[in-house]
Amino acid sequence: CGPLFFYILVHSTPSTLPLGIYCHVPFCAYTWDFCAFYQEKPHRRDLDRYLDAMDLEFAQIPTDRFVETVFWGGGTPGLLAAGDLERLGRSLLSRLAEPPLEWTIEMAPSTVKADKLEVLRDLGVTRISMGVQSFDPQLLQSLGRLHSPKQIYTAWERVQAAGFPQTNLDLMFAIPGQSIEQWEADIREAARLAPTHLSTYCLTFEEDTALYVKLSQGKVSIDEEKELRFYERGWELLNELGYAQYEISNFAQAGAECIHNTNTWRMHEWLGCGPSAASQYGGERYQRPANLDHWCAALESGEYPKTERVELDDDLLLADSIIFGLRMNAGVDLDVLQERFHASAHRRELEAALRRFESEGLVESKGPHYWLTHRGRLLCDAIGSALLDI
Image 1 (cartoon, one colour):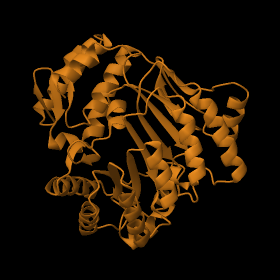
Image 2 (tube, rainbow, N blue to C red; image 1 turned 90 degrees about the vertical axis):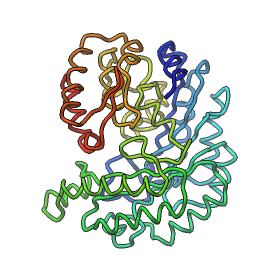
Image 3 (tube, rainbow, N blue to C red; image 1 turned 30 degrees about the vertical axis):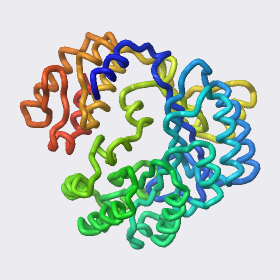
Image 4 (tube, rainbow, N blue to C red; image 1 turned 180 degrees about the horizontal axis):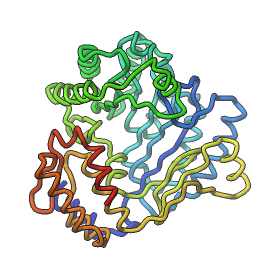
């Protein structure tokens, strides 16, 4: 981040900062063992009602703000038919003064079809993000995934042929029964396909998932020391293969970082559209109801319901900017954040904690600029919790 970026950030007001739009597509053909996101099996009536309600969501997008990024997640956005994708995209674009700088859509390999990709490219989508998880058929089966390695390769050929400027593959590690050698093989195979971006996620045991039930029944277990080995080997190998780490779980070729996510980690504003979608906008955080019927009924009656509502103040935004900012390799500049959020109540305590982490070899600094060391990145969740307590 250069001086110009910091000048713009410090001297901007929320109304002039770029705005992100997140669209949640809740439909999935199958509920994965590890997935805790809100999702529904698709039925035509529900799809039509969802699309009508999204028209109402998009009508709330302010016309005086530049929408820099759009992100469609789920669920499985790619499960929508080509015509439905086009309707959703055209409805969104009708509210924007100009196309977004970056537009990402998540797709599962089994949903990638040529007609859908053609529609998305024509809409102006700039990045296809495909949830591969693994190329190993046994590991895919253990996760409850429907796609096969053959479907991954077929889908990837279609994505490449469609000519999107940016591509991402998601990989997962610490899968029960997975060896370090299998993890290395997945990374090498993903890099061989040459996406511009790679995301790697440690398998987590979320409540209300089939995997969590297996954990509680003792059918699977967590090995934290092995998880750390997966982390370290992944970081090392991805660097060797030409993917620079810019956040704990994200790696990119030069210029291919995900702007939508980095803006989110820097506590910019975004509007969430769709059932269960979260927003940070207008001085508060909130979610839409995680229920398709309740969400649709509210919008149809002219209401825009907000659940889990939290009012934002400068101290909270400062703390979150530090916690999420430290997940990025670029780190944080306390002077910039101080001026941006005008928060001073906890600056001294936060700085003292960072100095303590520095003495423990977890953080490095240069003046007011702090970033995590290699060891610190391995313990980023614990560091974040300690800062949050302050």
